[in-house]
Length: 318
Image 1: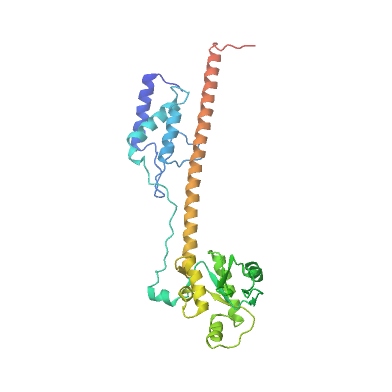
Image 2: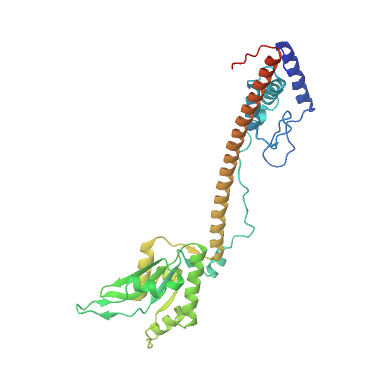
């Protein structure tokens, strides 16, 4: 149905009155922190939950359509006026934020942290008693980085470092693992393997400090705070400590801290993906609006052509 100018003004005022009185509902019931809106003049639309900027864009597009003076245009023109006046205070909704998960565990006290088994991060395995020989030049030589990495490949080492002293190869290596949970799990399994073979830290320190005979198998353990600082009077400790200190500042973590890091990483990724999805949905709905507007314009043009045809003013070209 079409209206002349005066009829359109009167019809628009009636629609605006219905919107303000609540006969025609625009604002949905609150179901979250962000208000959503619906178009009372497009009940057949599947989507009935718009953000403020999206419902306003929809109404403006329909009000500026090619179907001049039609009911749809007048209704949406009234909706534009209602949004810009009565609901203008809702034009800036709070920015979307993905739900933030909160930790429920209490942060441990300093004394508790000291008592915990804190590991040097990135997880590092200290290997002693790598077999060395004297070369013809009188320099100590031992297994290469590649050989050690292949030997312990089943534990998934990330990097292998050989330590050198004044006489050459010190027979000491440091194996690092990835900082993620899998790296921590591999490092734990590696240390357990040495402990079960009685080739762990305590076994090595007992043999070294008591000057006991040792076999040719390597000894190993995960680096901790005492390895980072070392004992300067012990040559082996000093070499390991110097390497760890040169690598960077002291960073100690336990499994709880690892879990917190992974949780924060997943929260940030979830929030980023949620915001990206919201943006893509908004673009998709804008595209649907353009398609609907084009469809309605085409339908209106067909209706006008049919009306002209009935009135005998439609010219058919053979």
